[in-house]
Length: 237
View (cartoon, one colour):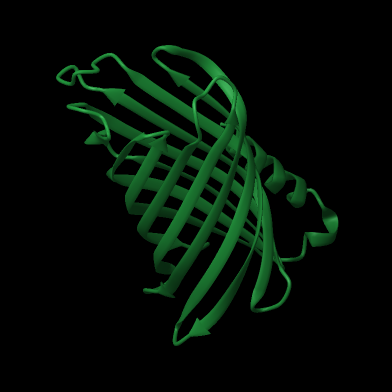
């Protein structure tokens, strides 16, 4: 996977930098579960529903620098009914991967940039009137953002916002693959607190919106909105 190769390349590069050899490194693998509500629209049609996802991540920190690699995918396809289409039931699948690099400007503020990949698959069931139809939507590209964090009690409350510029591809059962541009925006509110020893728990709210308005041969714009409630455990060593 592209983001994984970039992540380990960054770690190896920093490890070989002698000026940082005497500074401690910290690694925190993480596992998440998430309830994600999605809203996909293409012209006058769309799909709205929810998926249960499982995610894995790894955060690396060194002095004021940090990085995070993450992937998340729904546990199994969910059956949903399309909006503004008669008698069509579909399965919905969503996978997201990202790699980010950040720098803490001070104990409160930080900035970050990275690369993300999003993949959506919508497939009509054999029992629906449009059986055999499918949609595949992929987008990938860089993003930038900023965040703030505040210690509260024994934990840390943080907020971040980001914006992405992406290249996208769209394929439908009766339309050849078409490519174009997309933009994305994200907001997050996140709480992290220690449990015992090196363990910590995390709870987060995430809002991601993607706008595909410059795809060749597509009719109208395509939009995706994903709201996630995520809980997780991490261990630092």
